Image (cartoon, rainbow, N blue to C red; front, top):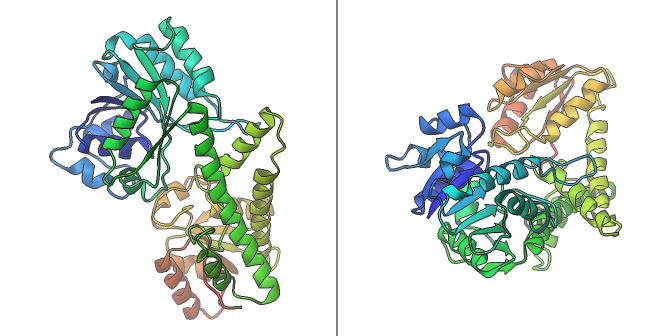
Length: 417
């Protein structure tokens, strides 16, 4: 197929590269000229595993442009992978998606006949069959049928394993409201997968709900594990032993059942507010997602309190700023949120993470160290915020070498009671 992949961000670039390796002719589109230039010059702007290898292969045919119209020429499918931030009420902002769909509609005569618009961006339930479809029909001046189709197929991936998750997904979901769009979308999704996997075909609204509910269930498990940790600490029990035992039950499973810091990242913090907004929109009280958010906030307060163990005016060191070690991503980082809370108290905060030093220098109010040792000797209490064993070893080594060891708080560590 000829594919126009719109949005070359965290998901879009890996997806476009995997699609190209699967034999599709892919043109990538991004509004940021620097991203387009980097792709065309085969420069890697991400630490995501697999991306550098695919982009650097001699046979890589991915071409990037800032023009959606350019990418749409003779294309069979346009895939929309632009970000959707959430609004004050928790629902997702469709602005970027609608802007793209509007341009696709205006230039629909450039595409192949028929042409499928496949939305991958996370959206609130009812968006595809409602506002998105309405926009596409209004711009094209016709009801969607044989000429142009619209479908929704969310990706279920984790930063740090996006390429693998596209190729080896646990599930594939295609939400379409007519048969041919569902079939074309299914064929495209199936072509990217390395191993056989069943495709669940459903309505677009069912697919939207599934995407949101799955992510919210994962955050529920994370919050539950942190509640287990709190309860076990109060009883002098080993929370890891308890979580390991719980995870052995097939009804529960071990994935994400691990005491640690609050959940964060680019996606998880928005999912429960979005689910709450979706529930309220149909008159349902969102007790569960709001409880998950409350437990997550409680975990923030617990760690913030631990950072006061050396005194209210003590200097706080933070080692490991990424929300997930090795990704280079600080968006939604619990470490940075805790640093902000300490800064708001008027405390000095010194930070270090070797993978994101350039980003760290743009953060206001904090001091940026040049090494782990500098953080340790300059701080009264140190938060080792992610589960990087190398950083953990460096903190321990630096603490042993100083005459005034810092208090070290390591949320991921498997401490005995």
